[in-house]
Structures are given as C-alpha cells and as structure tokens.
Length: 136
Image (cartoon, rainbow, N blue to C red; front, side):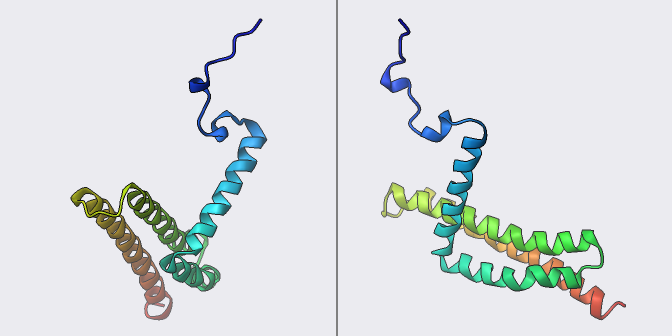
C-alpha cells in the first residue's frame, strides 16, 4: 500500500504541482489578474494609456525594426517596472502599516527604478524624435 506524504509536505500553492499546458494556462490567468490589479493603480493606468498612443506611434517613428523595438520596448519596460514597484509596495504594506526604515528604503528603491525607466524611455524617444525631425 503506497504511503502518502504527510500534509506538511504538500505544496502550499497548487500552482507548484501543475505541469505542462495546465500550468501555462493557470499562469496566464494569474498574469491577467496581475494586469487587472495594476490597472487599479493610477500610475499604471496613466502609463498604459500613454502606451496605447506610444506603441502604435513607435511603428511610424522607428526607421527599422531595431528602432521600433527600442521605442516600443522602452515603453513596455516602464510598465514592467511600475508593476514590480507596485508589487514591492503591496508586499511592504501587507507586513504592516507602521513606519520602518527598511520598508521606506524598499519603497524608495522601487520608486527610483520607475524614475530610471521613465528617464530611459524619455531619452530614447527624444533621440528618435530629434533624429526624425532635426537630423534628417
């Protein structure tokens, strides 16, 4: 008679036990839920609306697939970093509402990451616009 593992050995997250297409299907669902959760954040909504304009515009502005990839990729990177920053802030807030130096540090670093992503995106777009309109 097979011996079943003790209850403590069972994975706490059922996703860990899934394999193949079933795992991919459920992971896609979790990703969609993450995007929905991100949509509840004002900063992410603003960036998503900007992306709705900038992503198609990148096809017009870019003069080849590399430029289009840089323009579009920089926009998507901002959204990725914003979601990660929101995840950090949410995890810190779950720990507790009281002020702690390490919590502040983690939130500040997440915010700095968003700032750097925005500066990168702005720099890439400014260079492409300059090249298109002022440099021939």
